[in-house]
Length: 141
Image (cartoon, rainbow, N blue to C red; front, top):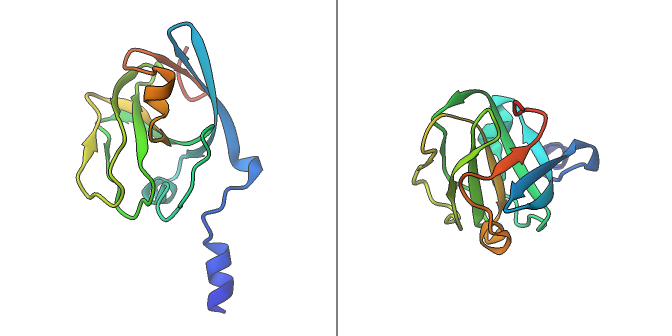
């Protein structure tokens, strides 16, 4: 019975759960496959206990309203880049190469609708920075 519970709670991603997101940066378009976390229990779990994230993958936290976001890395095994995004799709700040297992809060610089988590180093490699735009249906045009 315990084995069945472990399968049901497995953090593996199903292809149907992935959505495309685009970051427009310095005339370039960078696309990622992301899981969108809309429910509070999904956002609370996030990428905890996962040991891998593909380079073209990420997780988008949709808070459904603007707020000061406070994230942490508790039980997160891999370093991440966190992009804090307003309702209009503007990146207002970025936390690069976050520390796995840290319980220190990582906060947005102002009210945001969403946080996008990508593999650590992605922001540096692609030249993504605050002021860049993110395209996804949750953001106003």
